[in-house]
Structure formats: C-alpha cells, structure tokens
Length: 152
Image 1 (cartoon, rainbow, N blue to C red):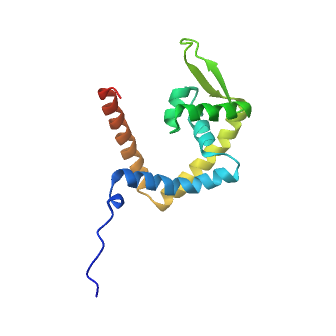
Image 2: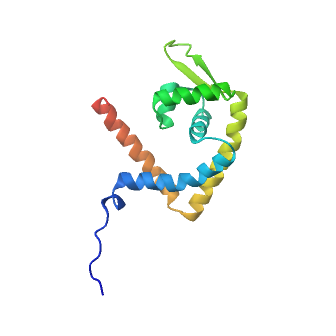
Image 3: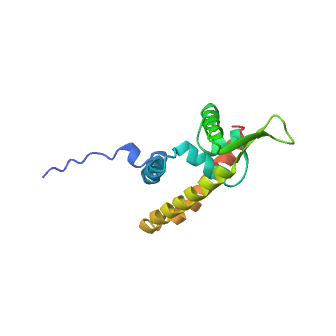
C-alpha cells in the first residue's frame, strides 16, 4: 500500500485561484448559450451593465473587466451594430456616456432572462451559491474601500 500522498497544490486552496476557477466553470455554461445566440461575452457584459442605465466608458470597462482600449473597440462594433450610442455628458463634456439603443434594449431583455434562468439552475444545483453572492459583494466593497484609501 502506497502511503505517500502528493501534497495538495497551492492553487487548490488559494482564494484567488478558487474564485477565478469557480467563475470560469460556472460562466462557461452561460457563455456557450451566448455563443449559440451569436453574442460575444464582452458584448453581453456591456449590454447587461447598460441595462441599469447609461455609464461612462471608464465605468463600463471596469464593470466588464476590460481594458479601456478594448472597451472602445467593443463599443465601436456595438455602435455600428445599432446596440449602443455614445454622447457627451451634459455636465462634464470631457466624459462620454454610453447607453442602449432600442435595439440594444430589446436584445438585452432576452439575454437577461436567459442569465436569470441560468443563475436559477446554478443555485438549484448549489444552494450555497445565494449566500456566496452576499459574501462576494462584501469582499468587493471592502477591497475597493481599501484601494480608495490607498489612492489606487
């Protein structure tokens, strides 16, 4: 009988790795559904973010986990496809606000329904997932507060 067991890998108990891997595993299911509809992940993220109202390009890039130059390219394509429009902010002309067009609003409605259905399936398989959302929101808020206090 072999009594030598391999030591656990660092990444198998490292919070950041676990968060990334869990996100990847669960998101992959939904991303397949997006691909079947002909929607890329960045476009989905922009549509979902803008479903709450207009955003600046910087805020969109942050919410969508994209670098600003990449976000600009995604927005160029989405504007060309008639999904979003960009306008200068009325109060601060240095800012550009992005909002959904009627076509974008129609598209995001169907996608949000699909996302909610997928989330319900995940929570049904993993009932602890609902509680994890609160924990993750708190983790994000605390981390952002720490970054702001450090001037990051």
